[in-house]
Each structure stands twice: as structure tokens, then as C-alpha cells.
Length: 61
Length: 253
Image 1: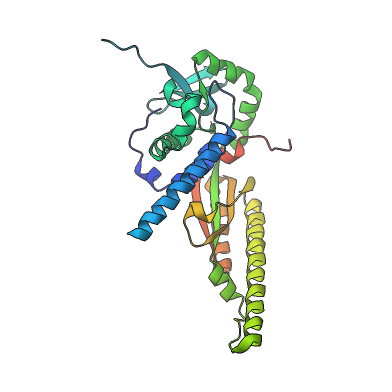
Image 2: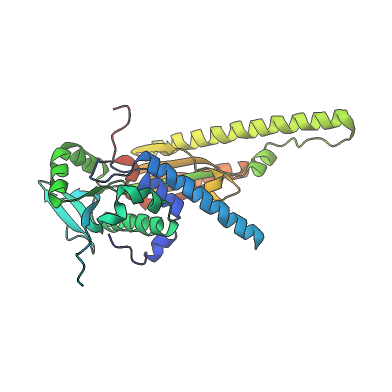
């Protein structure tokens, strides 16, 4: 998997929008390693904490 | 000292027809019969179960990998029909990928047939509560004193309830009309405000599978926008997306 610079078009798509589709939808198969629902829930918790901290920074600034 | 190469694994982005032309950079096709899995190599350590939860909470790591996943699917979707896999399906050996294609052949072929020539469009509806309430009219009367205060409070509460009911009604009505302009559609749970960071309330988070690039749905969306903007609701179109929402059998199937 290449994690090089994203294309400009992609930059307009918010991370939340991507997480909603890429982590929540699509064919689910049990590979050798598979994301669990609990993992995805953790992402939302993580984003929430992150966004809350960004908001705090903006308020302070 | 020469270090041993890090253990690699095969990350599966999705499935396409085996006839699909050379894939995008850094990925390859693993064929089995009429199907081909689109795979790329990843360091096994990155996705090891004991670190994955931590990685997913690393905003930089998450964003880079989620975007990379979508990027491969988007570039494939430009030239072929693709059945997107969920993030993080990984096999240690290419032989395991082939075995997966063999085992799931029928449902993957059915999923490919279902989304062929179609794209997914996203529609969000945002309600500005203040505008919705204002559009309902009858602003609380003025006046002072205890009685006037209670009266005003009651009117405000009643108006807030009517606004909530109206927002639900608009979301449901819009979804039904959008369904009529699509092959299939789903109303996903609206994203909470704490994640969207917007003042407005998301009242519809729909995804629709459409043909012909979705001309009919786009036109309908303009109609909905004109119709509901005066009530304080705005519509947003996203996509085209790879058909993430339409590759799993319905839950009641």
C-alpha cells in the first residue's frame, strides 16, 4: 500500500467521510488480520477526542 | 549488519473482473477464474492486531492509510467496475487470497454484477434549526411578567418540537424521493455534530446507487434544495464514490 501524497481531488474529501465509507462499509472478509467493530468504534472515539482538542485550540487562539 | 526484510503481507483493496487492464501503481491483480483481487504489499507489523487499535487512533497514520485505500479504489473505478473491500483485509500469502476468491466466488461475482455501470452518490441534508424554527413563524410574543414568561416558554418549546418533527419529515420525504431516482439507496446514521464540527444538524446521510452517472438524482437534488432551503434545510451531494454501500447482501437476506 502506497501512502504517498494524496491527489488534490482527494484532499477535498474529509477524513470523516472516508472513515465512514472505508472503515464502515465494503465487503467484510475474515482475512488473517481483520478490523473488528470495536476497532472502528475506537476510531470514532479517537476522532472525537482529536476534534474536541482542535476546537479547544481554536477557542484559545 | 544486514537486517532481514520486514515481514510483508497482502492487503486486499477490492475485487474486479479478471479482464481489467493493468492496475494502478503499487498494486497487482491476483486472478481466479473471472475474478481478480486487487492487492498491495504492506508491512505485516503495521497491521499486527496488538498495534492496530493504536494505529487507528494515530490521526496521521489513519488518514494516510484510509486515503491510500480510497485512492486505489477511486483510480480503479475510473476504468473498471470494482467491489470495494472494507479497510484492513489482509492475508499473509497470495495463496490465501486465491483461496478467498475461490470460496467467495459466487457472492463476489454477484456483487460485481450488481454494481456494474453504476456509481454511488452521497447526499447529506443539513438543517439549520434557527432557520427551521423561524420558517415555522409565530415567534413568541413579547410582554413581561410571570404569566407572559411562561407563555413564551411554552410557545418556544412547542415550536422546537414542531421544528424537530419537520426536520424528520423532510429527511424521510427526501430519502424516499431520492430512492425513486436510484437503483437502490440507504439512509445511514447521520454523523453527530461533535464529529462534523458544523452548526447545522445532519438530518440525512444517504448513499444511492445510480446509473448514467446519476443525472436524474442530481436534478432531483436541485429541486429538493429549492424546495427546502426556505424551510432551513440544505442539501449536499458527494461522489461519485466506489460503491462501498452496495456490495454487501442486505442484512435481512
